[in-house]
Image (tube, rainbow, N blue to C red; front, side, top):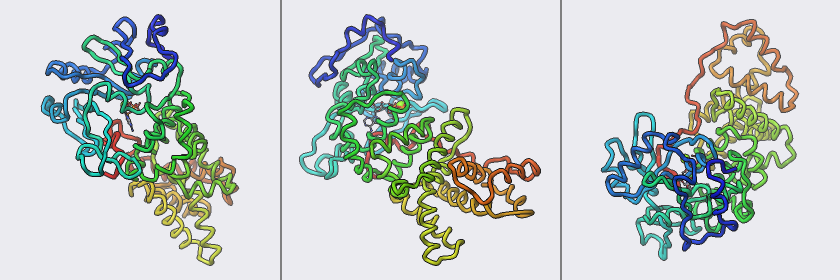
Length: 454
Ligand code: ATP
Ligand code: MG
């Protein structure tokens, strides 16, 4: 529910949200909203004031305004301006242009980075390759998006109406070109423009709508939801490295369980995890329960501020595929040890064709799987030695999860729980890597709206 807007203003909000590009924006004056400068990062304010001082327009935009109006705490502050990336770059000492296909400027203040984007405009491309600033592939996916425009045009190029609200320090007003305030009030996620076309331009918007639905608890408006299931295969065109980042944002943001259910509902899971989807569709309840247990556990760890790693996530998501491959190989006569090796390699190789899992994580996934066998079989001295294995903790947690999901194991996790109590000095306490793999607060590649192959 929209909190930070004065009641009287609510009557100004359009009741039907079909605002068109020709409409004047709805403008909230300083007294009509409660966004205060105190809630805004000092560095973001500096960027806004400096751009204004140099004669440019500058606004805070996107998630920060959405979250401030909802009384949430913004994750980061993004700025939109009519200055070109080169002009922004020239204005700030610690600025850097990032991204080629979607150029943005990172202005650095110690650990904080303010991302500054130049107003974008829609672009038609009559002939492929004729305009170096804007380019689409044959399926309508944007390969390059550097056509600059006005504030209004910029608003219409954004994804959802609630993400297209602007705030200016020159007058402290909020600008709404897309009826985003009305949708914020109705708790609706509505795509700007024709949803199918917008998903075609950038299929990642299908993941974003689900992420915001889970994070904000909003409903996906009917026309915005309608094309998703039929278009989800477009996700296969997205660069695997960008998908790794997006999947991390989806599953390591504290709402993984809810997001998994939405992904199944909208047929988004199968194009991203084809092997796993095939396995769980074959009535593999254990596999699905293991994934659900792992995602719930991840959400709880994030809530408790404990570290999480994509390795554990992918170990769970791909476990049903690994088990199926292994059984298949064994039934074809392969011995258990080589069957495990081959199966784990195949499960990972098939997955990285869609989502590129960095090697440090895929190695850890295979170790967690390999150790399952050791945990099921080891006894005596060998078992005690295993306690000091760098990946013991992760493998033990994984074993707990398998049990929790209902798997009957030859030797349960209790044995290992007791053994750790008996030999506390053997248990390695430092994590193998302190890289949590949690989505970075800021992208380093500038791959924001850039949907293509970088
Ligand atoms: P979060 O709270 O996750 O940061 P956000 O809405 O700020 O949410 P960002 O990825 O930081 O998300 O993007 C900032 C803004 O840029 C968005 O609010 C939206 O206006 C625009 N944007 C980002 N990605 C896209 C996209 N794929 N298509 C169109 N607009 C986008
Ligand atoms: Mg943001």
